[in-house]
Image (cartoon, rainbow, N blue to C red; front, side, top):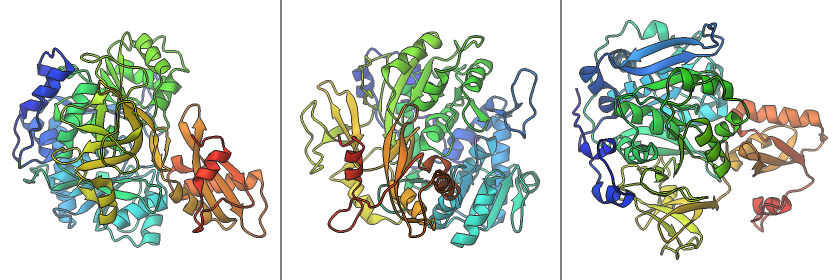
Length: 569
């Protein structure tokens, strides 16, 4: 088995802390030269505690058998079973030419195969590429082509998007495995190709700096950017997860999130952080989020720690919790968008004193600011304090240099050197990397302020990225998709406020000659974007306009559109 050490510095829960300052003073990064995530989240537990549960599994979709109590088809994976299945998949991928450093797409919903596919790639020293099942052919196709992926594990629910992407983007994949679907052409059915493989494949030795994850994030200009993360990224998450989790990592700890596992927050804040500590995770495949089902799952699986985005919490506030015993829940981590005091108060009342802790981060540097009620007060409107091991500052928003005075608004920045959470670089984008990392700081492109005690407050995005239900949406990608429709001459997209989702995209559309505005055309344009991009990216509002405001160089001026909507501030 690849080298594993206990790494005592990440065992926060084994200590009694007097203050947050004491914790920060005690903590220092412990990063072995040789570190493979698969060995730490899977292989070592298969050896030490093989019969302990790694994954609880429940399927609420049509494919899962419904039970009288309303639950879905259920199952579990012990760590021994989890490791054996990951080894089988690793052996299949290796037999089909996947080697160290190759990219492997993981286009799966919350199913055990999603976690297994990541671990299988890491066992080979390959690089996993998380892909949302909400992506259409453009979303899947661009990312797999840009990553030059060698293989993809795809769910039957999204395999049609992959097939169209392979045709349109000329993606050369050596292996395509279809989970719960019928294969075509050179594809193979997962449940036929993998079970016959050997259950033995130890994780290879990798350096902590070796690539492990290529995850794409949206920007304001151009195509999505591939964010390169090393194996060390898991270690970078642990201080934040321990702190947000209020050190609730005892033997009865159980984790769950309704967020899809293609998002770095759910994949590492919940799934692989839990497995690093040998704690079980609930994999629930249930389609769109249902608040009543969420209460049911928290009850039946005695979940103690959950990551629930603010949008999902607001949906849960609208349904009764009576009849569910949810007192096991001790901590709710949340983030990705503004939470609000009323949500935290509701959660504390509903879950028998459970704490809601906000965290702040982004794909390039996650969980950099956290709340921890055990050691530090929670201040209204604040995201919390810098995570142990992190240095966070508010820099001059114009120069990106000297920190501003306490209380002044500037750009949130994270010290780059020596922090394992920070990305290595953008995939094939050296100029964008250089713009992101300057003078030793990772610039978040978010505006915030910090009080005299170090508490951080989010103010706004510095760029035009739209944050809707925690998803980051690049307006240019939506604009390009709209412009590809025959009825559209040009389009501009901004974010507008939404009561439940924080923000939603609104499109301003100039029609091509011969086309007229109508409600039917609005629906057709929404469907066009849904079909090409991710389902969460479509413009929920569309306004037809005769012209768009432009700069002197001819670019659309989104700021003018925000001013028009009364959103200039």
